[in-house]
Amino acid sequence: MKPFFVTALQAAKMPRWLLLLMCALYVVPGLVGRDPWRYEDAAGFGVAWTMAVATRGLDDWLMPNVVGVPMVEEGPLPFWLGAIGIRVLPFLAPDTAVRGVAMAWLALALLCIWYATWLLARRPEAQPMDPFGASANHVDYGRAIADSALLLTLATFGLLARAHETTAESAQVAWIAVFLLGCALSLERPRLGGAVAGLAIGLTAASRGLPLAAALLLAAVLLATRAGAFRLVARPMLVGLLPVAVLGTAAWPLALAGSGEAGRWHLARWLDWNLALVSGPSLDTVAYAAQTIPWFFWPAWPIAGWAMWRWRGRWLEPALAVPIVCAALLALVAMLSPRGTEAMLLPLVPAAAMLGALGLPTIRRGLISLIDWFAVMTFTLVGAALWAYWIAFQTGWPPRMAFRAQQSVLGFLPSIDVFEVVAGAVVTLAWLGLVAWRISRQPRAMWRSVILSGGGMVLAWCLLMTLWLPAGNHRKTYRDAAQQAGLVVSPRHGCVATLGLDVAQRATFAYFGALRLDDTRRDCEWLLVADRANAPLDPAQVPGSWRPAWRGQRPVDRQEQFRLFRRVPG
Image (tube, rainbow, N blue to C red; front, top):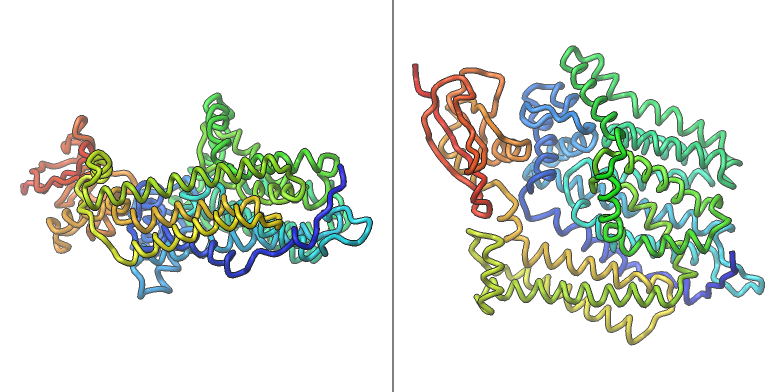
């Protein structure tokens, strides 16, 4: 590897207030002031809410379900946390409490990514060459790299929307970050670091299944036995890791196995799902990866690729080995999936950001300019478009833009919220100021290369979650339809059978409409049907005679319809 030099100015730390503000503006918007959104977000909330209500007692906690429909495709841990949030925050609406928990694990992910990067980057083998003793000290250098890793995480395109959902996939990003922190900590405090990494493995098994947990376990073993300084602490690290990992992984399956026939059925279905996760690869997986990875991991992937090339020959040094080994094994699990999904790519984001940050001190000016140019052009145009369409939506001019905006949120009446407009304006001015500062001052700090990408992503997200949040909520919620159905079905009328409802619809109709959905009983007075207008379902599929009582739909989807029937006496 060619030597490189980092001055104190290049290792200058990013102002803490600015870094914390950017993180807050990334974490909070999108998790407050809205309803559960279809599909995954509402389904995740439905599992947590069902646990909190616990009409079946402990079974609802052991066997994740949405108002009686089993959810065997994920573990219970994120939903346990959401249900606990509902129980301990009774002054908040249940959906707000669950999103508050999601906010906490997103903040935990960012915190762990920063500390893991800092612990690795300040190590002697990661330091720049300094034959004259004039380079930045190791603490400042590590801090600058950690700041850069955090900015790269904020800037990653594929993480943004999925990180703001109440799902196991978003929680898994936090557990990966905890694992990376545990591995980094193991070099200084082997038993504690190993225990933290083992805890992350157990959390992963109870969230996104055994394949990802096995990948993390294998990564820890490979690091302990093959990677530089890790070999010196291998024994105490694994002693701290293995018991915690095994106990954390086995606890819930063992509880299921001992909870009767229903528990064993759920466990068998969950194990089948785990096997299905690695039943590939397929051409669909490869094609999806080729199409998705370039934008999903932008701007981290070109910088991470440069880091791997620039540090070639030193991949077994801890600072490189931790993100490389972790990313490689998680990528292997993703490629073994029978079909490509964003959920399988999300776990790679923390490692990609860490690896990219290590490449910044040696990155060529041309690549820096490309990333900066892309960020300025893309996010300035996105911000301008969001403002232009919002103004057209509110005023009706220009007519063509107003029409397009109205068509995307049919049935929504535009209104102006002063706080949201002021917040959007402040964020926009801050973005313009950041661009002007970056262009005019030409700062030398290494994090300058990615601050525009991180700031631009924060700008776009804040505008979407302020100016466009009411309209977006109208587009993605079932609240109105569910409440209309709830007005027809008084609580005193008892249970409601269902036909054709997916888990997101089931969760939101039960929650917003206060409907007692129950498909196990044959004497329900009401039947709720969800279908398409061009392919209606026949209520005769449910025993009994039924007469129409109500029909509704979301205004933005004229094909999707909900029909409520009442049982004909006799």
